[in-house]
Image (cartoon, rainbow, N blue to C red; front, side, top):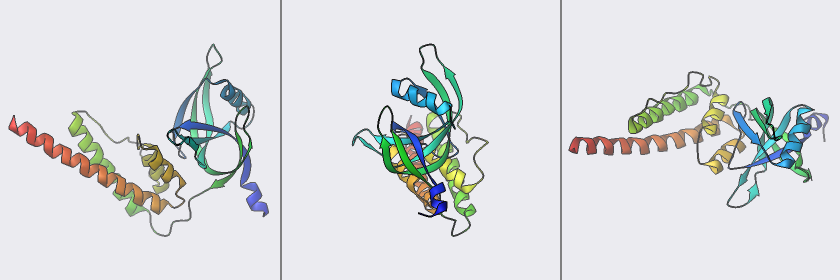
Length: 216
C-alpha cells in the first residue's frame, strides 16, 4: 500500500439508517435516541464530529457498502439524554471491513471521489436544471400550489447532481445507485432520464386534468 492510499483510509463510526441516503454537501437532521448511538455521538463529539451514514435496505435487511461521511454542525441535548442534531454530508466512502460491531459499528473505510470529467459538464447541468423547472411547474399545476425551485440551487454540476439525487423521495435504492456512481457525467445523465420520465408522467396527468376540467 502506498503512502497516499494510507492517508485515504481511516476508521469511521458507522450509523446505518433505513432507506436514508446522504449525499455530499446535503444536510441531514437526526434524532438520536438509541442507547448505543447516544454513546457513539458522545464519543464523536469529543473528536472530529464525523461519522459514516449507510443505507439499510429494510426489505433485504442488508447494509450498503458505500456511504457518506456526516459532520455534526449543531446539536441539542434533550432532558432524557436524547439528542437532536444537524449534520452535513462530506466525502463518500467505501467500507473495506468492519473492525467492531459493539456497542456500535466501526469500519475501516476508503474515501471515493468522482473521476475527472471527460467533457464540459455545463450543458448536462443546464438540461437537468431545465427538467427540474418543468417538473416543479407541472407539480404546482397539478396540486394547485405555489412551488418553486430554491434560489440557492447549486451552480456547480457535481453539487447539482448531489442536490437532485438527495431530493428524489421514496426511491432509496435509486439514490444509493446514484451515490455509488463515481462519474459526474454518468450521474447527471441518469438524472436526466429520471427527470424526463417524471416530467412526461406529470405532463400526461396535467392533460387529463385539463380535459376533465373542460368536461365539467
